[in-house]
Length: 257
Image (cartoon, rainbow, N blue to C red; front, side, top):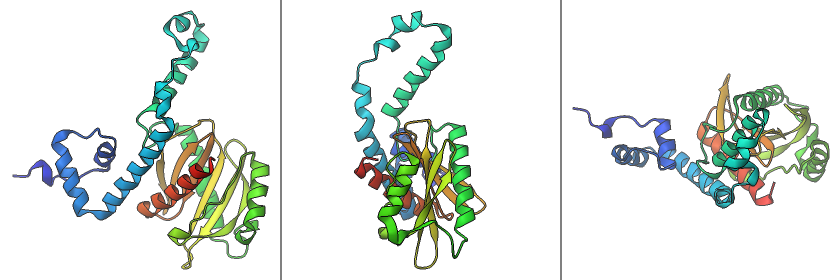
């Protein structure tokens, strides 16, 4: 007779394991699965590392006093047309304070933001990665000028991450239209010709979790941080895509972007 330990582990269970929300009777089965599947174990390790980094950054929000404008007495006097906005602000604070993790399911990324960012990013990726002579406007050899130019045009500090650890070298970048204004577009390439791109533009949401999408053989990871939305695109190897995206996130975090 089949036991719970023989049931294949789902991705939702892996996320629940990272978030400490997995039922006790499945924990041993998940840990046995991870021991036998190193690729999944590596993904779980990267998710947990991102979760720890985001908790370290945002958990203090939970300790802050509730603003007077959001107190029960104040809300009871608030005109109805403002009520939904106040409630939404409270829910956003809760989402930022807890339950944040390196999770490719993006619980607090709105469908419209996710769709518009990934749509624009994947469109640009597919358009330019096939270019041989003109894939970018400014070459990676002029990194300082590229960063300065994109920062000035986009309105925030654009940094081209160092991705040598993944075998990716900066090809260069260009300025593109984004969902809410100008967008920076950076392209990287391996010695074998594999290309990844980083698309970034202003986002209406300050912070979101990671969310994964795939379209016609191209994968993308979207997230937002400090009011800027990012999409890393390239291939269908989700583990590799997550590794590249984590390096991008970590370097932006270190630079305070």
